[in-house]
Length: 193
Length: 214
Image 1 (spheres, each protein chain N blue to C red):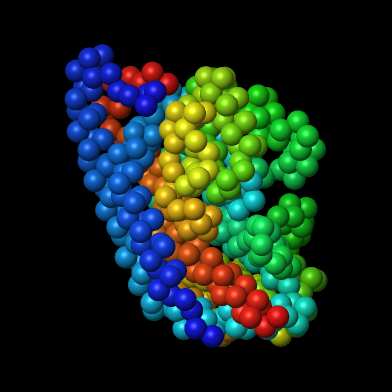
Image 2 (cartoon, rainbow over the protein chains, first blue to last red):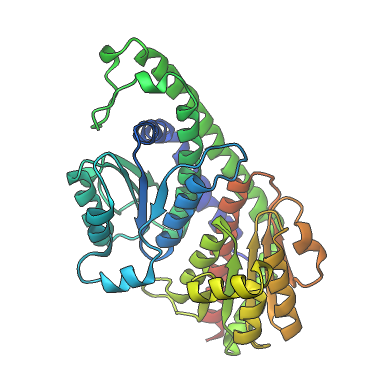
């Protein structure tokens, strides 16, 4: 068996280099997240399917950093509890948990590689209404920017390629949040949301 | 954007713009770094991924199931790859796959009663057969429970797949891994991102092989 290597590489090269063009958007989102942590906010992540795994991955980055010496920050995924996921299915699993567990001043991160992402979109709308800073990691043709403060779109329609780019985005998110938190200039800045 | 900075609120805001410019540059570098690593990995590991996909397709065709496992971020990657095989979306066949970190009762029982090193090996001993596939993920290659899991899988006659970073660590040395896929990087984050690519390309190749065989 031979791999269709050329195709795999081309798709990933183009979308991967496009991520660099969004560097400033990503940096500004990280700044907003760092400010929320600085003021006592917590990060709540969520997603469905493969993105549920990424939501857990993002949370573990913050709570148990891979780099020794980085401080633990409060974060948890809303997609880990089988009882909650199955029991709240009709009520809106993430929106319901956000209403009960979230607070104004927290950070909501919705992750999706689907074009139909109503569950995640509904939860982000609730989070925004509650006064949380909202981020969406999405893909081309997915969630639009009307329900979030920071829309970070992986520029591929292929859900697998998009997911790979999102991993880089959330790893960078974790890293840059610490850069901002360690900078004495952070506390002097203001954001509207 | 709704949270644009308001430079007029604080004299330090100009400094923050400078900091933003610095971190923006560092983000651009990381994006380029992973593009290059991904290219290197697919070129370097292409033949190994193809051989692994062939073995997986044969195992699935023979009724085998895929068991995936890892720790921390790698446990979520194991969960994601199992879900990809199980529920790849419209138009694609579903294949039997499960991750070994989803059952909290089992994880806590095995850890409490035996020890964390045994959590995957014991589950495989109970659930696995010689027709199945075991995929262990460890960025360092040194996670003892992953190594033990793959050793148990090998003992049972399963197809064993190991994903690691750095030099491959114990995964490369334990002799229990039929298909070893090592990412040539020492950054945990870049390794995980490249491993996701490897898993996705592996799935795509397995899917194609099974489609062609129909």
